[in-house]
Amino acid sequence: MDILKYLKTNAKRIDDNLDKYLPPEDEYPDIIHKAMRYSAINGGKRIRPILCLAACETVGGKKEDALMVACAIELIHAYSLIHDDLPAMDNDDFRRGKPSCHKKYGEAIAILTGDALLTHAFYLFSKGKNPEQNNKILEEISYAISTFGMIGGQVVDMLSENKLPDAPVLQYIHTHKTGALICASVKAGCILGGGGEKELDALTKYGELIGLAFQIVDDIIEIEGEKGKMRNSDIEQSKLTYPAVYGIAESKQRASRLVTKATILLDEFWGKNTPLYQLTELIGNRGY
Ligand code: GRG
Image (tube, rainbow, N blue to C red; front, side):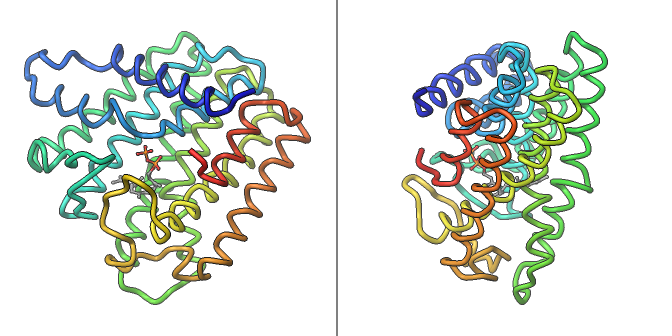
């Protein structure tokens, strides 16, 4: 299978469906609907929703059954980026090569746009056809983005700026700020695909490994650079990162070990011939 084609096709599928699920941009009060679309559609790798679709397929489900939840997860990700870019947080003027939401629409609208995307995501979760699955997904996602997950990670991240390198704190930040939503995306796909308890356990472990690997690779890219990336560097902001604690070479080794563990786990359960397996190798290399 051509994994790059898989990524491209599914990213387009996510974009098309975001277009369908978001309020029309000329709907009153149009400024907020324009800002929601500006921040959520076009640009972005769509890695979380694609992981959700791929996990659904891995356990034998149909991608279509996970599409709305996958889009809702991308809206949550977009909300987190908008709020993260605000002057009170990372103060980034650009996101995905365009002015960040607050630069384009002003701070008040940007705060409301993040709130609106988060709210809209939960509206979409409520629309699922299977109440039992809906409840499980609501529980998984809301926990993953709560103060016990993404928000907790963001709080500790902010409090750790300009502090001495601290490995346990770094681990907390990465597994909570980034890892939790990635892991929940995989779990949601498994639930929607009808995965059993053992499959859910395996994919939870997998999600934890790949979520942490994703953030370590992001830390490395922040230093080594990636085309089109335009945000304040972690170094400028004295962020707690893997390279700051372990150096670049060991960070690469650690990311690679996590990816290897994740692929071994997938192989044991489903073999190598799944989109999720190939996606995992690609995330390790960020070859896209
Ligand atoms: C403000 C509640 C709140 C949370 C913020 C996710 C997050 C927590 C902040 C975003 C800033 C950041 C750099 C987080 C690390 C996670 C990460 C690598 C985000 C970028 O995700 P990608 O690479 O971005 O998937 P695209 O643009 O491809 O969607």
